[in-house]
Image (cartoon, rainbow, N blue to C red; front, side, top):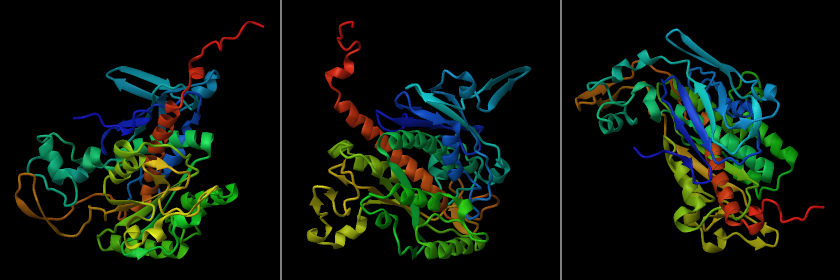
Length: 425
């Protein structure tokens, strides 16, 4: 099996762990030294992703508490080592240690661990072995035969959405670096659920990206703060309030019927620095399309005006340019695979959750045909509900890699001068 890394040669994240395994391990490579980072920074974004964070999502409840094991340092050891303690017991021997709470990145790999607690592996008994059922819409059949029967079928194993914990950890490091150096912010909103479409889009609200700080902060809060929702209403991250109410009802109705619905999530990068990315075969457009489109359950990915561009004339689609920049943003922030300084705009389409309770036609792993019905399990009726932080994270990781690559290409001789050739004063 090839090495799996999210990102590129300058900034990337690797993950390991299955849905019902002991935990998810993440390693972030390439973060420059000197970035202030805390465990709470990672936790805030993981809380948006975790199961049980939204009443419209899966009933599975996970704390998803993260601990940082490497990659930070602070001369104040009390502040550095103020994180949660972790311990292991092997036989009669036990080892316990403190973990990192806050510090500065060292430029070396940053490792983080999230343990899994709320597992009910017995729910997956019907999928075990060569005669186990194959779930329609899942990768059960191809994974089983590709691994010669050695894959972990519990909760989807490695192909579970739980693997995106690593995406969020890497993305959080990237977005902290980018906001500190460029003021870059990533936001997302659901713009379609089933056939129901929002009348207002995030890209239209953001416009050219020249938002006042207060307005941007209010927008972020609106799209991420579930506690701000009036009592009795369900939280659905959308800029169109009426759409959010109708979409929530649509999701609840699908769940009641033992079914699921698809969703489209719009993700926007604001204040993305210009000139990041490469043309042609390793363009930032290609990397973002691959990263966002490569998420499990994603069926479509479009940039800027997307499919609507097909029905326009060039005179309608070309963005007027003045000295201050592009006046419109049909191009979605990228031209020739290189950022223009306009907001990055992508829309990602998620298929309906494959796990439903309706009767379906399927086979067992030995190809015996069956009438399939799910026995037990806890699942999201709409994947788009928790997907926002993941698509934001993947966009941040790819932008971070492109920014560092561009920075590396502009290094001059002065960057390699240790003593500055100065005479003693």
